[in-house]
Image (tube, rainbow, N blue to C red; front, side):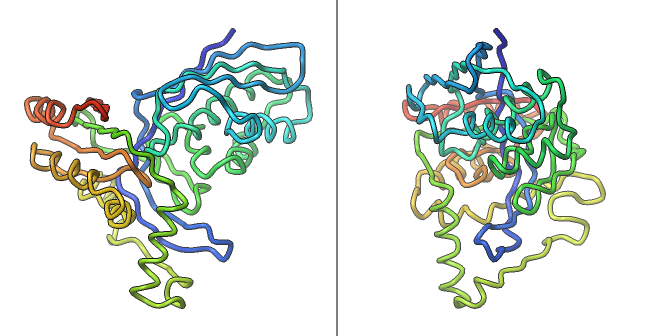
Length: 295
């Protein structure tokens, strides 16, 4: 039996830079992996072909066999390789909340793809594996990497990012709120259309807001974060705006929603131990989980 850990990611800012004819939004974001919260995958190789997934955790105890990222990743990998793929029973222990902007399902798929590629006799090269991952989900290719990355396009453009954040403190707040990513983008489109007219919305093309790059300036991390989806998601879920305000009030240098929400993160100075403790105490609650990290 093999046991895999699927870490989560947070978005250190997210900007929507374009809209493709097929309706997919292009983004520019810094993805940063965090060890907590995380999922655990126990893999048992079987003689029977295919994959069976059992799941338990905070969000659910059963898995729709045809509609989960592990099943999709396994099927896509099996189609892409020219060699036998072992049959699997996967016991998935969910720790990453769904609808939180933390990439839980994508991380599970990425972990499985990486493991599968080490077990087959004719593994895929990095480019082919990334193509398979993108076919499973926009965030999945990032989870083939081990460190922070700048992610652009619809998730296919990934560059490792050297960030000067070592030792900084990050407080991640996960309220018990599920945010639908398609709904968040639909609300964003509707808001943009109401401001600019339908034609402007269909021809959305935004460039980087900073001369030296959207989030990196001369190789240094720009901590003035923003997330283009915050306005519409906060309108539906005002509690998230309150969480962000509390993080800033407790001394965070900056705070933003991760992805399409619902999790919200605050970045603190390296020396801000007391401030992060205060933020954690203020935001911990029955319907919230709070994680304090040193980067």
